[in-house]
Amino acid sequence: MRYKRDKERKNDVISLRLNEERIEVLERHRQALMEQLNRPVSLSEAAFLVLEDRVEAVERETARYELLKNPAESLWKIRQQWEAEHTLSVAEWDLLAIYLQIGAEEQRQVPPVWRPAAPCRESFLGLVEAFASLLQSQKKEVFGKHLWYYFANLDGHNSGIPFSEKEDAEQSYETVRRLIATQKAQLQSEEDWKYPGSVGRCLLTAIQSEPESRRIDQALAPYWNVLWRIAARGHWLRHHSPVRIVQPDSSGPAERPKFPDSIETRNLRLSFGDGGSGDIAFHLEFRPPRSFTYSILHYPELIEFHAMLEEFDELSAWNGRYFRAIVATNEDSGETKYTLWPKQQDIEIAFTDKEWLRLRDLFRQAWEKPEITERMVALQLEYGEQG
Image (cartoon, rainbow, N blue to C red; front, side, top):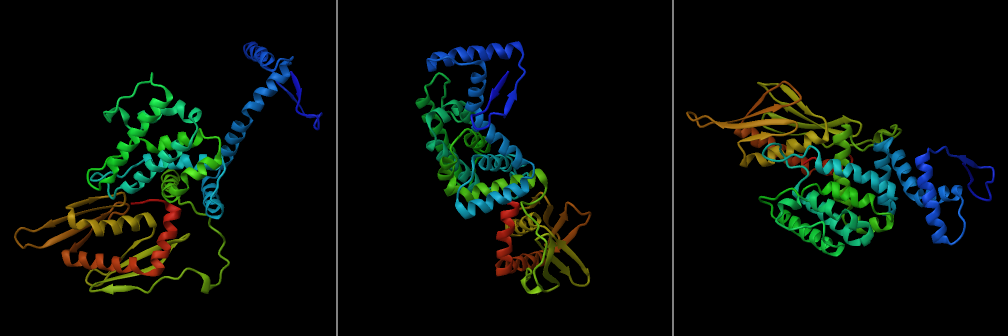
């Protein structure tokens, strides 16, 4: 079967070889078209019209496939595009949603099993609100066919809210809205909050089923920061690398990243340097009698180490992605000892309670330095939420 695509490209001919079953389907479609158009329709024209009906979906799928070939570069360009114009194509939103689901649902750090909590409560609240905003903006024919899916993935079966597949679209929509409100209420309290089911999966479906990019832009614009943090986290989880484009360094010495001066206290000194490819390294130097240096080279480890120092006052043990630590008090002497094990290195570091407090103070001072603050903000955009 042959069909000429248009009058201007008469020599552009496509040949299709179909089996009998597909020809029968196409023939039935041709008959339906003739009745709808009230004119003769050839088999070739029927095949062309089928393709025309699918052209936007095919173009979207093709663009998404191209973006997935180099996700780090694609996501980096998506962030630049959004910051410049606050608009993305539907395929770009699709890619962001794929990594957003990964970041929201894979390898959740759930205390006390794994600390710190990541994604955190505030991020999940933002995701639920973003999903509610997009759902509210969509047309009934878009969201209607997914309502049961949304209910199930938002943990609706354990919510006590009844839902029947026999409900009409309006009733089902109201049921899902009630469930969203319940999930938001559970996320409002800092204590005993619960994960809102698979909200990342719901957002992925809502985005991929929406044909109008402008509608997605407008609905999700207020939530861009949290969406990006979770998507960048998803890229880091899947590829073990940040969303970063490393450019050849042609800058002069005066333009290269500057690090603050070292800070120190009794027996401890904290200095800063290049961690490689844009990361910042923290070097913790122990003075005599121990005389050794422990270095933290990458942003995710720094974030967890800082969180551990800040939260350990209320804990007896810490189990994170990169560090494990315990605190114990000797009943006879009354001395308190902190013991730290970096998981990726076979070492053990012991601290007295005074040394631990001095270490915490050093990191607090570091976190207040403008050079560190500025770099941490930039690194969060590359690594996403790490705790």
